[in-house]
Amino acid sequence: KEYSVQFAQSGSATRFAVGWKKLPDGNVCGENLTWSFAATTGVLTISGSGSMSDFGTAEDGSGGYCTTAPWAEYALDGSITALKVEEGVTTLGAYAFYGIGSLGTANLPRTLTEIGDRAFFRSGVSVVNYAGTESEWGQIELNDNFSSLRYAKINCADGPVDLVTFCGSNITWTFDEETGTLTLSGTGSTWDC
View (cartoon, rainbow, N blue to C red):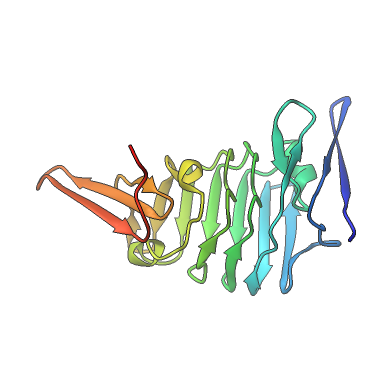
């Protein structure tokens, strides 16, 4: 098996990440997916079709952890401010955007069916723009992303998702103050409280 070491220079400190999974070569991030980063806009773009590879995390050199994805050097220096995932992408890999505190907006395609384990954990995502409807958003398998997208404003093609709070890995609740109705949506079990 091959493993990769990535180095990133930030100020006077050199940070490194050692991945436990083989990192894709070049700008590949899945069998049929590629990535690009526009430094002038801060946008990380994922293009192609199908599933993204899963990644891991490693110490970031400042006491925290960050993704081992091939864009880690841009995550470490705070350059990534927005994510654009193009139509055709179906899965975002585990830990793909883990620890990217500078990431504020994620633009996600209607073709998305799954967000891998902790893909957005400890990221700074505060706004998600989803190309599908609210009903379609509810069908996406979120895995362990409850804590990372819990406070994000979710905008769907048919409008914003009202107050949504996770109460299970794939279970959300909404409360209609006018009618006093509590609605649970999703699949699986709720957490013990």
